[in-house]
Length: 394
Image 1 (cartoon, helix red, strand yellow):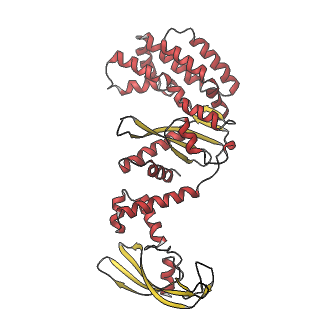
Image 2 (image 1 turned 30 degrees about the vertical axis):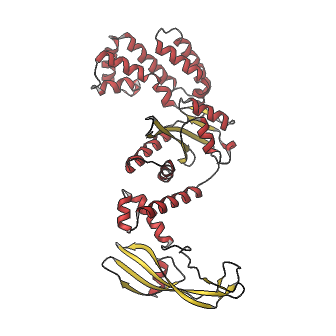
Image 3 (image 1 turned 60 degrees about the horizontal axis):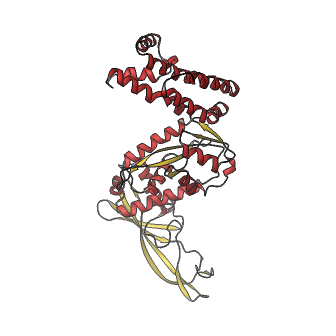
């Protein structure tokens, strides 16, 4: 009864455990034997039960209560009468030529996800660093393959910094593609150019399924979405449109005050007026009256916020036309640049009022990506970084 219970615990149903002995202070060895069943020759698939001789193998299993566990399994070598050659019977749960069980690999992968660093995992499981890395990333690769599915209806694309190039010093980027329906990261691409996205995403089927693509104000993402998803509606992210005037406002404020220590004033300038309490709004208006140029920039920023509070595509279309017409009478260079941007991105901006989709979820996954990089103190291999991020954001 005990042997059957232990076999079930170790997920080795065809292994009979005879006894347990201690090997040092932190190791246990289980003496086992393979149940005698009819096996099939791996060369000709002929059934055989003729015993040629016996072999004993030593395999490592997952630790139990911080004790390393080893299995000494006595197996038969059977003789195939058709091939006239012997072969060793397999053990379910232990792959050919492996010196550890599948259960050990699964526990090792779970520990890598839960422990704070891989050095602690290596010390706890008493394995080499090379084996740990190979096993962990192999399991992540298999896990990523099981989640391969066609393109969903709505996706979002955004980039974040991956690392700094050692030779040239420029920043290398990674692009994240988010599945809105399943609320997970669909894929991670090295680079943010249209050619890199097309090359690394061409293996995913069902391109015609995509109806909505949410992007920021990045031209490569726009050209990629138009060419790769010809039937999709491109939506400009609301946050990136609202912050178009933020750099100009902060620059003017810095010219006036000459310091960046007053974070309260900075927050008030960037916040929507409807989210500011009454007394703070009065103080802000008194401050802006002294500086007409900053006051005008602030008014145009508030006009953009009011524009995004409109409900309905037709109303938003008329409001955007009126807004760009009024901007044509402004003499401020920043407003002229803003007007050109709004006219150029008019279709993507108005598509927001049809879908109400934003890049907020993508920005959340970008924050997770920063935590993944910080936890590992950076990555040299993009392949390993991609697998870790897919595992963390799925």
